Amino acid sequence: MQAFVQSYNASGGVGGRRIEPVYAEMHSASNDYESQTQAACAAFTQDHHVAAVLSNVGYYSENLLTCLSKAGVPVVSGGWEAPDREDAGRFPLLITPVTLLGEARLAAVVDHLAAAGFLLARNRIGVVIEDCPVDQRVYRNGLAPAVQRAGLTVASTYQVRCFQSLQDVGNEASGLQDAVLQFRQSLVDRVMVVSQAAEANLVYLFSEGADGQRYFPGYALSSVTAPTVLALNAPADQLANMQGVGWLPDVDTADPAQAPPTTTGKQCLDRMRAAGIHPVTNADYTYVYGPCDTFTLYDSLLRATAGDATAASIMRALGNVGPRYVSASTVDGRTRISEGRVGAGAGRLFAFVRGRFEYTSAAFSL
Image (cartoon, rainbow, N blue to C red; front, top):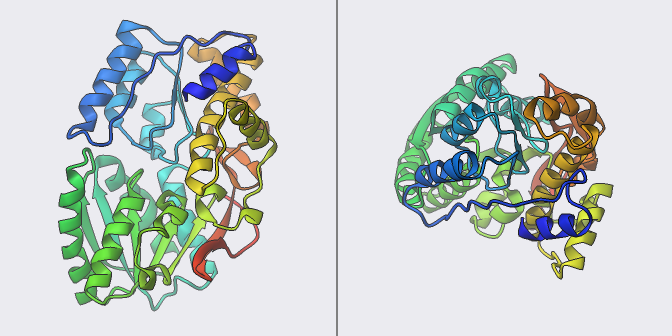
């Protein structure tokens, strides 16, 4: 983020306005993430009265969004975490250009993997649900109806602790051992996870437990699992059974030919190289493209408003800028306006083949 601030200020700022940064950090080793979000909001809204928050933390906090919404502060997030429809209504100033609403994400996974033959009527689906309010709603209003529409069966569900600190990982690991046993006893042969930001952790922990119990279900995943990162850690016999729907090439596929930089991506890579930053791994590109989208989109919005940073002007501009915005992160750079929000516009199927995750289909609209 700091490299982008320096780069934009060196080239005239965002929308012609110099950035006066106020930084708030999330420390992953903390035993209380929500206290950090409260401190961040106080810094943004009480100490400094910022015009906007540009975020790329990979953590979904309704408390932080509530605080910023009350203060009328727009948030542009380049992370893959996103609200459900209820939170989208509560937090209209939250802009998530590179991902999907929670319900839409899970419905896309079900619909496209059913069409591909990975989810069939004979399959018995087990669903791990992170026990956060937003995830409960996404399951109830998104995944469960999608499964029913597709003629599929949820054979078992398991609720795991809501992730709010590093210490919760241990509790989740213990709970997921129980989930593995429960799913085995229920003859589950397909596993799905409902989590706005922790899908990757939960899939990894479940796969470790399943491998230890010699249980080998299939996994129906999304980009939120960070497949290429998962491939570095999860057991090989579990990876072999993983397929999904993705819209973020930098985390979906290990084949560079399937993830060429978009025009926006190239511009941001040039900025980073000028700053001495040279991404190599999939994770490196993620750390460039996420902030790239937050800065590039906000710059486009400010230019459309002639520098007017008020929340009302920014949101009006989004309706015009959003449909034309070319993302650094998404498949083919495609975005779309849906339900009044800008988000990822195209996806592809992925699977673990030839020892790595790759795309296995052409692009389709989301």
